[in-house]
Amino acid sequence: DDFCRPFAPRWSAGDTQTALELMEAFGSRLDRAGIDYAFSDGTLIGALRYGTFVPWDDDMDVTLPSEDAVAQVRALFADDPVYCVFWKNTRYMVSKCDPPHYPFIDLETPMLWAACRLRGMLTHWNGNIGGGLASPAALSEKARNLTFPTTQIPFANGSLRVRVPLKAEEWLRSTYGEAWRTECVSPSGEHVG
Image (tube, rainbow, N blue to C red; front, side, top):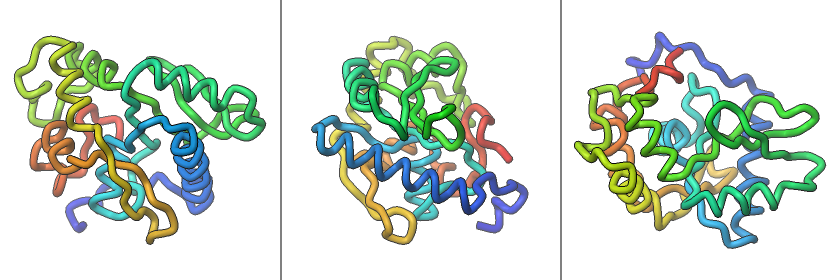
């Protein structure tokens, strides 16, 4: 993507390897426990556009169906000596422990996604906040319906399979507009290099 050249890569080879190990541990553990999830946001863009991470992104994003699922994830990792779940800013995150550090997975729910957008915390690049939906419940339901059910696709040259929304392209259009294919910015600017 020539249009993305101005953005500096954020992932070192070591970060990439750590992130892939975290994605694999996270995904396999949730799959075994029967907890639904989907890689979303910048991680979803990377999976579809590059087959791996967006080079200038700084985290991994996962959407879980509910706060109950977040609690289940916290319980799954409660006694893990390698990976831990911790609270930072507005959400839980998963990373290697001792102490928790980058790279990490941001855990979202459709309700958190809706609340952040309706509060203007994550305004879309084109000013679209939820396609005109103003109710947190309506926007959350829209996000849930676009995120679940999920499917698995190859990631990182096929070394790993990741779970993404079955309606991945529709999810991305709803969140970022058609520009998700060509623009190199995030709606909040947090992933701009």
